[in-house]
Image (cartoon, rainbow over all chains, first blue to last red; front, side, top):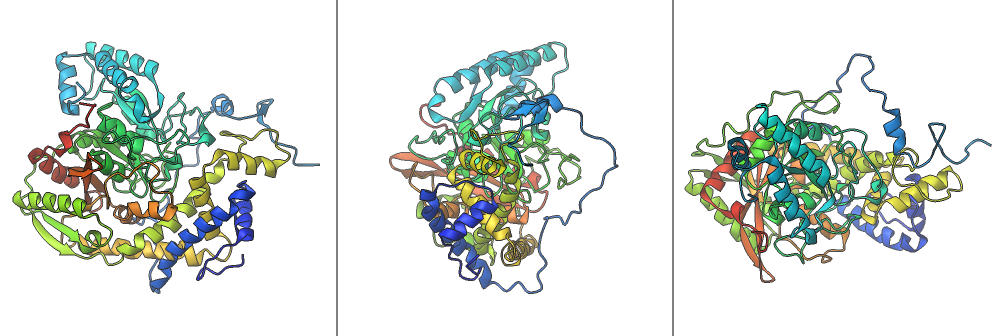
Length: 102
Length: 487
């Protein structure tokens, strides 16, 4: 991407690249508005860089909790029919997507 | 019946003054009648509610009713409800029928409370005005030309308009407290990890927390007794004994130390709102509390920090919506990439797209340290400020929101909207419990509009917050005021 975090100024190309990375279809006509909004948000976020955080440890969980481990046993019930019922397109009880292998 | 507290409803049902079916029908009549103009519910589950009410009445006749059996309620549409449409306020999930119940839904069901419907909300809980909902904005019952706040705007409006005694809400950056303030009700965001997030559609997983929205602190205590608890299906849920939240409600608050952070009373705070908050704090002093001025020096960083952490986590969480397994799918995709892009492009609204893009950018190669890691370090500093403060005080008080409810369509700039959560966000970043209670009214455009007082407590001190709030409500009647037309 063309910009540095210290002076965020996303251009049309940057927006298109970000949208592609996020697999988000956005209308060509909306790109300038997204660029302007995202630059305003990044300008707000930029206030973070004024603070020296040398030696500060990042906070991931307020209680410093660790991930719990559980026994390696089956805990989920088979809900195949209910889960498949929400799928937009299925065939032979499988999710259907456009062809990916030639 | 609709102006009774949960304790009164419980007593009335136990004495046989009314049945659950009668009570449930009374609330449904209000929802379908005078409540309809508020657009506060995405789905009204009339049949299920009546059937659950009949079961509750039957249970009671067999002598095995609990305290809450038969009292109806509303769930925010972010909670998965088995067999019922669960939209999260998005076109993406307009056709989604949840295959299972969220933890909170299980608990409420087990308590025997019939669900009246699912509350409207900002799309994927991203918003402070309820205007990002795919189903249109909710209207504030105090003035239907203004917003109810967000993202739990539907939940706040249904409680304020007395369409239900209780609604669930979720709070990632203020989404319970800010709408509670703007609609004149009581809302509690518990400590992060107090209530299981299982089945609550994820927005920013390190911040999201569910809590009760009710008329009063006493009602909220009743509901916390149902909602709180450990659940192994939420990996960040905290395994800690659940106290009886009703027990300390009547404790004396003489000698209570209230901290007032100077950063929460400065520029940007509406003068009329400030006057209401000052009066509320004086009221606490008259009840024997002591006021201590303090500083939370890093609080000005909470909004910038939040707008890295929340979008980064949202961009990751919302990647599950791919048009393949569930949710919206575009017509006639040319290939897999086209399927993803158009399904997501059509299914998400503008605010959700903005946040996904900010998050994607902040997490993209080479930017992680400058954004997400930096934000996590600032979270630590913001959290340390509170740690220092709670060495000196028992609770922190401030306005919940810098202004009363604004007009529908008044704020279109995203950053201006983000700043409406300026007083609530730090609590989420630190993981602390926070509450908003009605503290008074301000005249705005000819309407009396409610003002919320925010109470922030130390970790797992929900009981103390509820006690402190209840003592105020025993001596004031702001929480009993009902919007004109909904009396």
